[in-house]
Image (tube, one colour):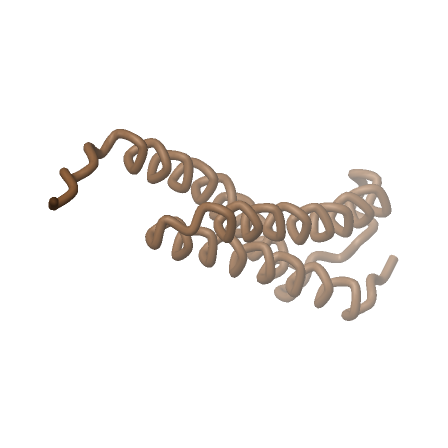
Length: 112
């Protein structure tokens, strides 16, 4: 069974989008822009789900029998997805830690 390049490219695009949003969430958290960080994490999750859906379709079509030939672009797409998923998970944890640290910082006394 052949898979078309468009399917593999869509997997790469969605995975790349997920990673980009996760990195933007980290940048927003550095600025303590919590709403923006949350929006970026949500966008990262949405893009990762789209990529994962494609991956699941490919796995289903293969049926564990090697029906889909593995080529370099498919390996590349899988690598993108796994990196994006890890990046998103780590970004969620780091944003949460930054938020907790910001809440623990004592506020400076106001000048009179």
